[in-house]
Amino acid sequence: MKRDFLSIADLNKEEIFEIISVAQEFKKGRYEKILKDKIFALIFEKPSLRTRVSFEAGIKKLGADTIYLSQQDIGMGKREAVKDIAKNLERWVDGIIARVYSHRTLEILSKEAKIPVINALSDLEHPCQILADLLTVKEISGELKGPLAFVGDGNNVCHSLILGFALTGGEIRVATPKGYEAKDKIIKKAKQIAEKTGAKIVHTYDPREAVKNVKFIYTDVWASMGQESEAEIRRKVFKDYQVNFELIKIADKDVKFMHCLPAHRGEEVTDEVLDADFSIVYEQAENRMWAQMGLLKFLFKEP
Ligand code: CP
Ligand code: NVA
Image (cartoon, rainbow, N blue to C red; front, side, top):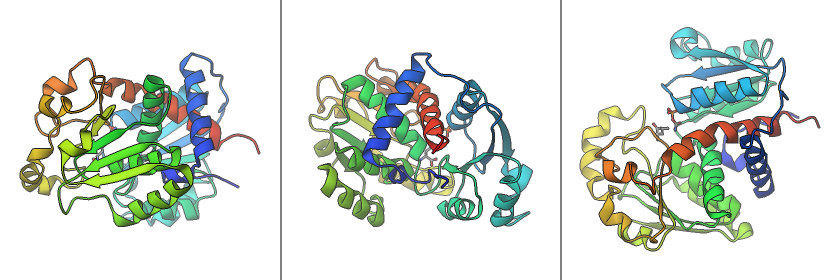
């Protein structure tokens, strides 16, 4: 049976650790052309630097090839129904990697296509980002315990982080303004998983409380792609949630700063913090490629 990757919770704890360990091997240069002759369709309804390049580069390193399709090219759901796009693509390619506005689009692709579908970011989750982040945290601390504080918007990245920490049994604290919390259904699912893994998930409205003694502070933009019209109002709502030196000082003395990028310098994070030696944002970006190569090996392994 094909395996899709729409949510980080499509994997269990052992599978996440397996993918991270394969990614670490790949990063040492120990990889072969295990996906020779495969072709992947990369559908992007929104812009991307990291996700597109890290997938294209990683896929080519594993001996496969890619076809990039922008919204202008295929007009998913406009020029043609999502279902028909799935039913066509499965005739030519081996996997679909899609960045979409609505998570529902991924669910349709997954239901209708006989080939694996990978979420390259939706309004609900960004699971490929979080695989790379877990790899990065593991490289730095040798484990996945955290504690990690996510400060900002309860968005797609925040959702996948919560689920990722729930699955791997670490501690995550989330600080958001009122009205911008993570979705209830994500928290509910994460808490159910945490009952089995022993993970600790805490929400607060106070960023200072969230970052007390944490080893990792993570933030993301206040207005995600598609929310540009809300940017001005969000700048006001989120102004006390900026990650700056004042906030960093409350964390552990060896705290690391994380951001999925792209960053809006001077908004959710100051230049000083983003450019500091404790900022690991470019390690996260590099790890996108290794983690996704590990994911592809996992999804395409022979039964
Ligand atoms: N972090 C991330 O997904 O970056 P892109 O939007 O550039 O792909
Ligand atoms: N939350 C951001 C992440 C970008 C990688 C967005 O959805 O735009």
